[in-house]
Length: 79
Image (cartoon, rainbow, N blue to C red):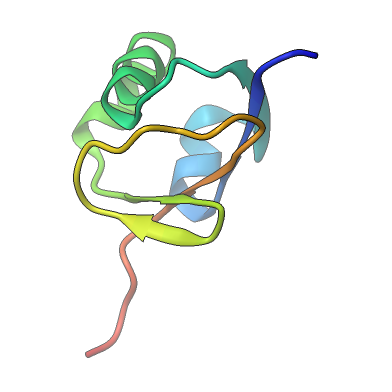
């Protein structure tokens, strides 16, 4: 059993990454994942985006469950 997580990127984030979906080994937590993403895609560091795990937004460092699906969401527009 592999402990890979699927990351889906939307909008400008997908454009910066050059792809809408990647599979990566689960680093265990969102802060470790962000560090890894910033290493691979340095242009993301200057962008604002939200992170969702299994369709739930998380605003602080969170552990990532096995085989989770994560989404990188651009800022929502509107009021």
